[in-house]
Image (tube, rainbow, N blue to C red; front, side, top):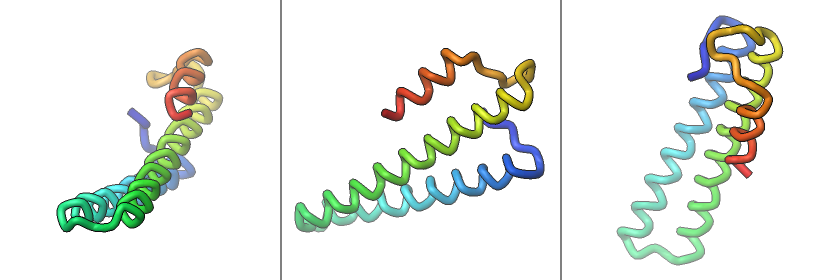
Length: 92
């Protein structure tokens, strides 16, 4: 879990939440399109937008964790380099 304190981390939380909400709306549009028998092109385009929004949110989360680990390596939520690498690679 990303610990939120006032400052840059709070801004990152807002970015993450905005991206996730955007993805949620786009996913709802994909579901509606599939239920309505929408065109393949429209469904795939919306699905790609969902995937991109989720990927971007994931990268912001990982980059925030990296910064927090550098700023506070002994912190409660600190991750090792190996753990950060694994998180990053799961998004690839």
